[in-house]
Image (cartoon, rainbow, N blue to C red; front, top):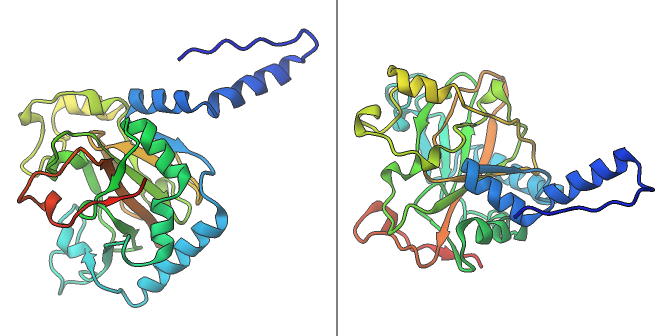
Length: 277
């Protein structure tokens, strides 16, 4: 919704501009409009430092040694992944699974108002549920053995009544180009693609000129602890390997309206979703 801001003639130009920017940034309707347009939104400084610090230390403790359930790099089969669990780096953790049930801090993050209230606006429902079957993990990228993630939509292997899910990405350390911050294609959640533009695993075929033109529009924003990235399940995204010497850690959840139910007898229906509002 467009808003009209009126200023006194006594205001300075800089004050009026700053106030207008603050009003736009803090306007919930503006956030929802940007999410609807782009298929993703970065919300800066949304989670308190104390919570994020607890999330990070809890995740680090669960990696030393890795506490099951864990998915290893060799099991994801992405470009650059070790070929087997017995190869060098094969047992490098990629995801600490079942995050929500691991620790109270992870549950607090999933239920934090800065997340749930935005989800209610973005999804268009007061009753929001967390899927225990998709994401619900601490995503890691380790130096040396992290793999590249090709362009994909998360909805490709999910089965729900409606393709209307939103993932929430919570960085626990700074994320940037060097350590594999997410890249996203704005507006791609609204694009219908012929099946031939995707490979056998439903990744975007980067050898095709129309896809290459699409990828040129890719955007990425550095993320800091306290920021939250929301993205639609149909938004194409990708990430490079971690080329730094430090582990990248991100807490990732996926949410849906409670009346948007998983299809019976599919992976999406394996464990019951959890209401968070």
